[in-house]
Amino acid sequence: MIIIRLWNFLRGYAIIIVEGLRIERFINMAISNGIYIWDIKKQSYTSISAKIGLENFGKMREIVRKTDSSIVIKEKRGFPFILKNLKRHKFFTACVLLLVVTVYMLCSYIWMIEVVGTKTIDPKMVMEIVNQEGLKEGVRKAKLDKRSIENKVLIKLPELSWIGIQIRGTKAVVEVVEKREEPELIGKADACDIIAAKSGIIHKILVLNGDGVVKDGTTVQKGQVLVSGTIVRENTETRLVHSLAQVTARTWYEDAEEMDLEQIEYKNTGRKTIQYVLKILDKELGFQKTVPYDEYNEVREEKNIISFGNYIFPVKLISKRYNELVEVPKTLTVDEAKKRSEERLNERLKLQLSENAVILDKKINYIVEKKSVMAKISVEILEEIGVKKRIQAK
Image (cartoon, rainbow, N blue to C red):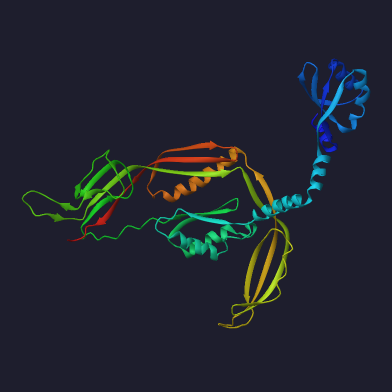
């Protein structure tokens, strides 16, 4: 049935209105004569609307005469009429086609970059470095080597513990995780308090030196004093001591990850072309040929060609290897999207956990949308939260 309708669409069809007192006989005679009629709808007691192939319209005259009916073409549809309309409006059609091609081409490039996850580091600094490494507005997505860019940024920004680049349409999201601040080294002879490194609920506090300020079960906020190194007693002089304590608390970690079901992967076809350039100082000499591939990645290698022992002269031969890539659309199943989201969430969770942290409970909830899956993780952790803070002498 679908094939027949598709065929009629390609050949063209008409929506007709048939009026008469013998409508049922009209339909039966049309069918018995091999005329295909579809989408028959009753308009009134004496009329119907239906669709019929244009090549069959001429055959209806004899049936109309025998059933004493009348037939009118209400509308003509199908590919021939669409093509006819396009020919009438050639300029408009050309503009539409040009727009479609332009949009398609623009979708192959990165036009927006966002840096997320920074706390103390200036996101502009991260943006500047990723720009230097090749991720910038106007770059073709197929040319990006995300893993290489991530590694180079980590080298240039040792303050980061993790970086991930996600391509979402024409937008690149650079997500970073900063390293935890190393606690200040405080000597045993120095007076200090113990404060909460994270917000949570005190599970157990064992004070070895100093005055405990909170008890088991107390809800504390990040930075709150847990053990005071300022000892105040009646009839004695106030003393400052080096606080010592073991403080464990229940803390919570939450995160979310959205995974698009429609993914674009790039496959190496095995075809490649190599171009050579001579580099003297900072100048590259050579004829740059057009890369014969629509999608490709570039592997650049530099080799010093003039050197004597430890004396190396600034003359290099640069080879640029272009590997052809083809876009391979991949549609993830919901389960695959859930698995990928969970893997990314667990990867980020590991970076947040301290060495002695114990996971008490972990829940991952999923929200399945038409085009994506959103995973939300909630983790309850038992960990040491006490850190020392020097007491500044007044």
